[in-house]
Image 1 (tube, helix red, strand yellow):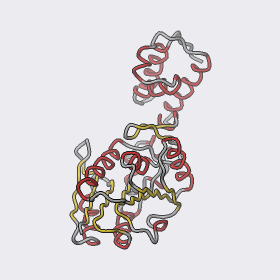
Image 2: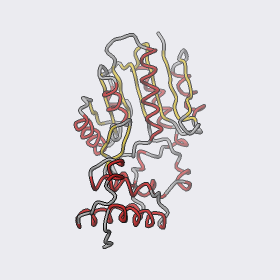
Image 3: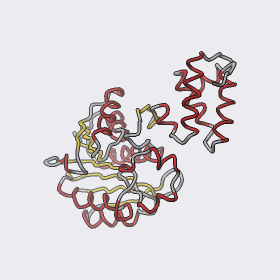
Length: 286
């Protein structure tokens, strides 16, 4: 095992090791924060502190795991989303910063579209629960239902909801099946949208560790959007809001599915922080 005098030496070793293995150096500080249970600012204040043997062993083990390809979020068991820490493991997709924009865009539209009344929101394909839980905590008056096809993902979402103090209703099932008999005001979804033939261009870190059922979809990644567009008209109140994350090449096709199902709706394709078309919002007016 490597032996470091202090936190700074450990970070220096980890940074070199990660670069040599084609990984991002920033993972070193993420793992150190996790090992010490402190913030990045506090790590910077304690660079001369000595690590215990146990801390050294754990730090090296997690850095080597990441060096071998395991995403650092799975190594430390968490990821930040909308200012909160979510448990993540191989049962769920790692929440991405782009998805935070779906939450933000939804909150902004709720204020414009709805008069003050009790609203019901469904997050379809919730995974870690990041979208559903963030919406409930940002807009406590919402009733939130979270669905997923994976019982393991749903267990992770329920765990996150408990830890973060969010009351959400987790339901197992495919797409809108767990929502039969419901009338919804808001539906959000970040479904699997990558075409199978795109796998060859993807990072091995994603392919080897993240759940393929949460990444890939048939019909060039479009099947779930088509099915949602077909199934949602029966469930939506008026006014209503549908917000979806999409692959950056899919905007026009997904918009056309929803325009066909909701001819009177106002549909917009929004860009993410990187300037790529990433979200579709469908506003259904009275």
